[in-house]
Image (cartoon, rainbow, N blue to C red; front, top):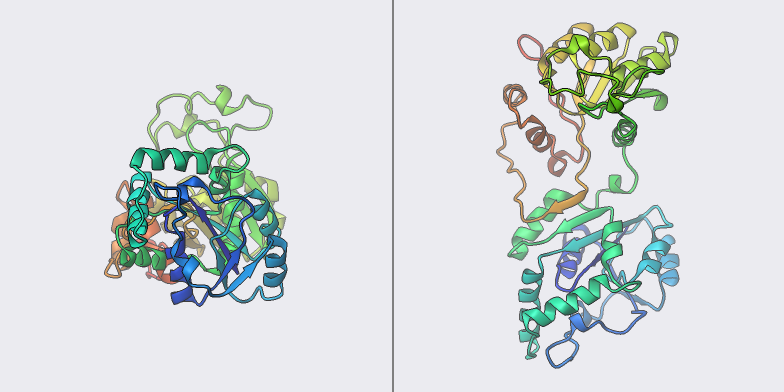
Length: 394
């Protein structure tokens, strides 16, 4: 694995790299600059303010990105980290390999200025004024062609580092489990759930975007998304009056003309292709009606991400029909705020607590914590049916 950390001055790249070195046995790599030192890295007198790693003089330094890539390719099973992501050419070259993970690190400019002031003070240098630092920072990030902003947007994981201490930063990084290999190659659950999310983007239903993938023996049988039947006007074009009105969730369902994602996937597959051992992945827990149909056609397992208002009823149907229901929450990616403390280990993970959480409006947020990547590395929590059914926690 090779992790590349990119971001503005004093965003925390070196601190994160040091954490990976200390806690996960990464090795630091350096890549020579291809351009002059930006003004944002200089004091008020335009003297370069060396970053901490400059003085360490350890690990490996490469003159160009291709040489670095060739070196790591022969040693890709080892763990490497670099903060020298200088431009899009570097990113384009490194992204050719499946072992590279691009991580951006950002922080509020006021916090980064305070960190840079401390760095200047440690070198007995005068820092620039905040107003000057802001102008230099804008030039560093947004200058056409050479600015870093395009690199930050391309990162697979985006970290917001407004933490106030190294200890809190390291605690948040430990919870994030940044070097987990599944970030490079998704697990089967993550892979199929992402396909369900992609299918949901084809939805034209005005109420909710839902996508579904039907799988057997790790092969996709069919996909589906919710919307009006073929030949009719799309829901978002007025094809379903109920969805285009302000109907509350769970009301006037008899007048809804939209087929659900699960129904479309089942119709597409056909009964003869759905045999024992088939798994249905859906980005939203199936409704009561779809649960009955899923049970009838012989689906063995249902995996979902987001909750729905009738989860407990659906769980009862699946339990009665012998269908295994579980929730899968993918590892956190996108923008992750490291200043938000992760859930503590004393979180109540009992089946009774899970059932109570189902009844809360903020179920999704809590479910993501209960099935947190930080503790069980993506092992999903099985959402168990209430009242009389055996509770299983995995």
